[in-house]
Image 1: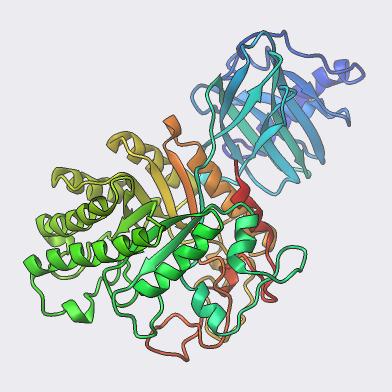
Image 2: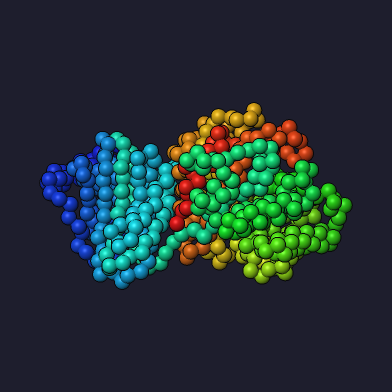
Length: 519
């Protein structure tokens, strides 16, 4: 248990056990019903809370020193396997939607550990606890529609011996949560299909990958745009075709302009060959015309973009050297040209600005403070977050919460992914290839991949004031197929990503895809 020696934990457990000897034989009793939860920070011990364990393991739920906001927390722990629930029953509520919030920590590995709202007159809603690094607290939320005026707040652990969870600072307030963007970047899907990739749903039935993902709950398709790529993929024509497919399935689109002929990211922001000799003034015109041309063609075919990124992972700027962050006024001018073009085509298209390093709050602040100072227009803050590169979930949460509050804008995890295996399927070493690269608590298994996506989405959902839009999984359909490699100029290049797709090496849908149906 983080921050608690085993001696102290056992001592606290022993105290709880004495109480348990008195009450273990009695049926669990509901706490005094109220319209609002009491003792939400556990500063009065367990007063107001009830405990239930079918196995008589009430002692596994106890309070001890070391809270999130105060001096005390609720802990679930036992030296033997246990299953325990700590709860409060509320009544006299006005019917409507309510949100439960709690700060939590967990050592991970439990069969289950979660917050829940149950017996509320509608389907039980729950949010799983993530494994947390270095004793960091994470805020989670879950919401439910109350009908009948009653609801139970429930904190649950079904754990193996020695596994632990902490809970603190509970709130229960009117309002709802959920994610409006549950997307996937399917930019490489056409090339994969052209080189023979096949896909099957979870039941093993062959089908169209986009359709399979739509049936799993995916509602947004992200598509990157290159200016003149060597292989002819990710250009205007291919993006138009993919947008038609998405629209036919009732999905929205996020168009991701790289302003390059190939990959643009924090390490490279190369001009397209056609713009190579252009100076700043001409590049502003290039950006406007290219952005307008693609988006207007999308609009003309009835697939107006719902959201657009002006640049991809632009931590260091774009269109180097003119658009480097070493010259913020010029970078601002280039981004503004793209944003103005997007709004000229459709005022309803949301403009997102996209950085990597989703756990880097100082870097995010520095970049967006400059963008705001330069009066760059934008609607959405988009961040990439890969847990094996970009910090802990707590650092992601801190950054998302701060960015949403500081700039008054909704936030989006525009890229995330995780490995379902460490095995290689095409001979090119994968970006995540060894156990040392994995995030603690998330094995490279189908279940580990699913849990990682679940927990990233849960952190986005918890952004205050409904400003967490959702998450976009990066290249969920990019399985290993000869000819569909990472380098558009090299047909023999391989894929370093196939072990992070949400289709396995036989093309079958993996459990992670079920989280596209996140509430």
